[in-house]
Image (cartoon, rainbow, N blue to C red):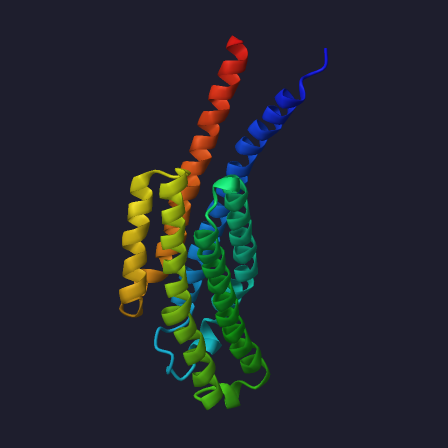
Length: 233
């Protein structure tokens, strides 16, 4: 007996609905873990003061090198997370918020990559010319560039991403309303006080981790209900 096309279509949609959230959740979890690790490695190796003479290059640069090399992998996972979420939303995605959602995410990634490249360039040049690099204008310029890019611009794009994602969550229901409200509050903190809050970097990955865990748990719950329904029928 051949299955009706509508039944095949429904089956395909059901499988897609079950697989896409899982892909988004797994990518979001990996992104969160990697980004928290990157910020922690940079925190313990690179001084907060961008005008520091550069003594860390001789003693703690190994952790910074590891952090810089982890950035591309975090970026790939973040892109996968965004793509899987957009695929999940499908026709329910609003064009305006989709543009802000996608644009702010890409800007955040671009600034994160640029800041990592600046730190990586400093380490590379120090390896070739250590004496000339210490306490040089080039070192201070690169450090100040990376510092301002992350603390002023990238982190604010992270706040815009959280606001747009929270709005989409409220309208589509892919995450609980309290998570969206929490996202609004944390995003406002990033937009208004990120320059003065040293722990502001971890807000985005922790929030993405929270949403990802919810999506993954909801996916397993839906899969269990679908299996139970098939068993009863």
